Length: 511
Image 1 (cartoon, rainbow, N blue to C red):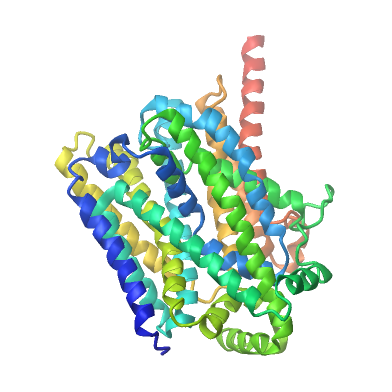
Image 2 (tube, rainbow, N blue to C red):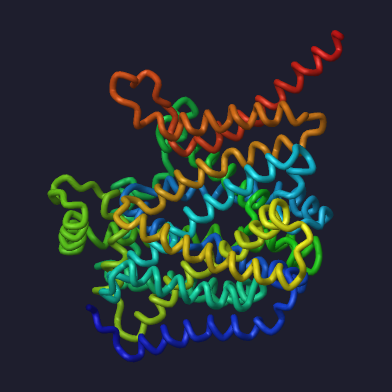
């Protein structure tokens, strides 16, 4: 086990204690479900924007993005470039819609529009997506912290998870938001420190990074071809990013719930733009870290040897079989273990913990809210008392946290962290977004919505699983890239619903 210096352990201890104290501080306010879920609408816009930014900047970004840039290029950065377009639509249409509705749950209006099935379907999709997201974040944090501390990954996931459960259950949404403000600052500082250390380790500083990166195509955003959607081109990632971000800002309870915590509609809209203004440049920093590590490895071959040997041992395969994408996620943890000086390691560990805690805590709170509003009150006890509401929220938050810990443990050993999360989110989010967009069009009947959703689900299942078909059925496989699942699935639901509605109108007009 790597023994961290006392000063680093002190920084980590102070950070964790601070998170718990924030939870205790706000626990005194949690006397109602409204305070627990929306902080009674008292959060200033700037704090809400930083909270949204911290949720976006998870350990999937902190570790997965540099690993992706190391193993390939800047193609995945196009995801960030799609955010402003999705933010514009969300600020202009989604925020006013949810603020006027007054419903804390993002899925209540779907029942009003199409019936209980639509609300339940979206709720299940959201919960599954959150478990996948929180699990991948736990795994990403454990991947780095194992290299830094030598602790077993399952132990790291369990200890981190219990800490998050405590302050999230104690403090509710207000604690989640204010801890995320602090966490956003901590992990941004950590990223800048890491980048400075990598640049300082190059023979000629940043000049070598640009020279090596440009020579090896590491800054490429991908092909701009409009004819090829079977590979991860610029347009494939842009479309994926636009639809995922539209789902985040428009359908994800994580974000919708926080629109209600703002003091006004105007501040809620501004918070979305503040999130974008922070995330886009900071995500660029993480991509540059990955490219910088690639250049660093060219000047320090021992880096690749050590990382390859570790990855080969974990996968039980020869070193010669590994590709850069197979060990990209391990390069940054290795660099931190061997190159970060004493005194800064505690800050880096705190930054990694922040990257995990910020997204998981908001996921726990929002999922518990959905369980209370869309499952418990809808199907179990519609007349639940305020005291019982709080009990349900506390219990659901704890259970969701424990399930997320289990999901994180089950993901130990996967390849690219970012690829895994992007594929899972595309599967679970496609149906939700398509149904939501269909609900915004007047005249769509319940029967058309049901049929269109079934069609969309089948399309998403086919695109996601057809790659596992046996060789003799190769002609039935999808030739589109996996990132296109949410794009095609969303469009399949929306267009099918529109077509079915027009057909029904033609039949009615002929009668």
